[in-house]
Length: 532
Image (cartoon, rainbow, N blue to C red; front, top):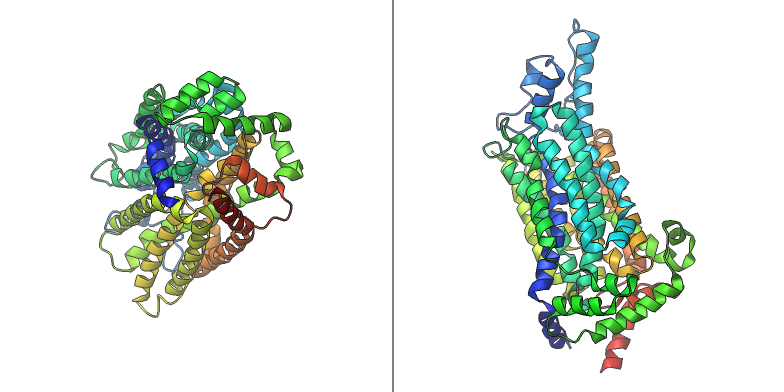
């Protein structure tokens, strides 16, 4: 049976399908690039902000904040138990000068966080624009936002740079909020069932590739310097232009054409382009069943998604997988990695951090092949448990670091393991499992809500983590370990296996009240015996 499925999958993997999926996930590449690009040139951009805003450094220490290796200590990441790294104003300094570091911090925080605000705002319109314009046309139109945002950042030196960067980040966030909903919707609808999971993990691969490239290009001898940083910030506009022109070659989603527009012949043509010489009638029959169900249930609004008991279990699962991705502590790991490498005696910690990015990318590639063999649920559970153990090891390493210097290596290993387990399951799976949990009727609303939840959690972590880290010190990862335990228990009892299931089969699971997640395995065995 496995051999037959593998042959069928290879048969369905056509050039048009590869082009369509590659083109779509360029949106997630831009998302990853925008996440990572703002960190590397922080010192250079802050210095530029000082010049533009007329902020004078308070003392020699303020101007020499960067270390000898050119890295910038992140506030709050000094060795715990030492003096806080806050700048103290001299006794004779004016009140305006005393406030100036806070003004700089405010503008820098806005430069970083407006990206998430833009994503939160636009994520609610994903369903509307996807249904109104179609998946391909919608991705074409929203690329205008990406190009505009990147132009604003690329031209930041020619105007009030702080305002242009904040505006550019916000507009780019609007694009990424829409793209993070439209791309999984399109990819899940054009992918054959046998390849849906593997192609779905490409979202996360595109994100980590974008982050890695932004880290490398952000090195000071490349683009992370005073002359080139505007180009660094605006460079993902090139990917937006490439996506724009490639989308002109991509077929529209056959599910959208058949179910939403009722264009049977166009849907068949689209399927033939995507599947090659395969008979499209089996998928057409599946779409017909989904269409009948969608017609009977009508269009589902966001309000109905929450008020109807029919969707309650699926909505809770969809939201929890998004929350678990953002609140797992992965951002905290990246936040502290450079500091931990510094304390471990690494001469160039920035390269060690890039090494983490490389591991991140490699194991995302591995997850592409694992997800269809091991299944979504199994990988999600394994990833959460591995992250939990790594978080505890990280805590032990940080707490005992002052007593045993070799504990820094425990922390380093824990960082790499944490990233590996994240990319095995909790990283890629939330991006595509939501599209698998819902049929055509509620899918756009569900993706919009899940997208908003992901962006909101991203924003909360970004805004609150620093305060929590200052309060808890080395015990901050205990909080993440506790959260990971909660997420693991929830996934074990509630998250169903969606591997190899049609949308109707997945929806049927949630229609059965008090149907445990384990029953999906029994259902799969039953289906296997019936086919035999």
